[in-house]
Length: 157
Image 1: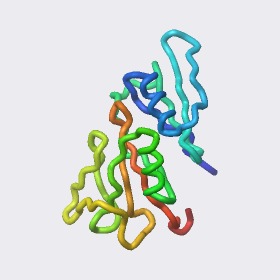
Image 2: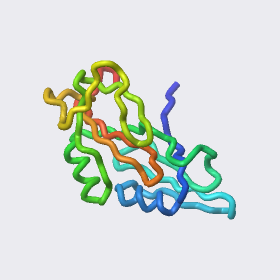
Image 3: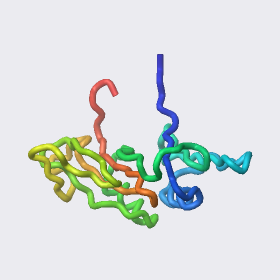
Image 4: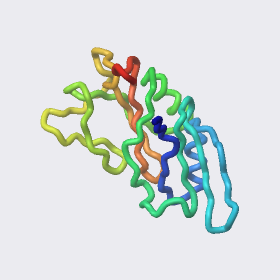
């Protein structure tokens, strides 16, 4: 059986503001439908992704900004970060963790390190390890995204 993740629901407080943000970030608008006054769905897809996001009116009762740890995988972290900056999106500096892989909690659109020995260090992972360099950004409500550089997939992926 194949199970493919197709859609992620994002809680937002202002549908038009969120739509503008994600279009500005380069997401493709797939659907903006409001067949009845009480319901509106905005469906967008990140460039190159098979998984999309959806938000709107009557879509979810979750608190706006409560979705954290949404990973966007990129092959060149510096290039992806610069493209978002060029589009007017505020993005953190590229960083890596002193221990290699990042194990963290997402809180309010930021990454906090809770495990002993973890340290967020500015710059790409010095060994260039796949899965080890990051940058973060948040939408206007605080839903948190992580850019993660992956140049070579783990076996079986």
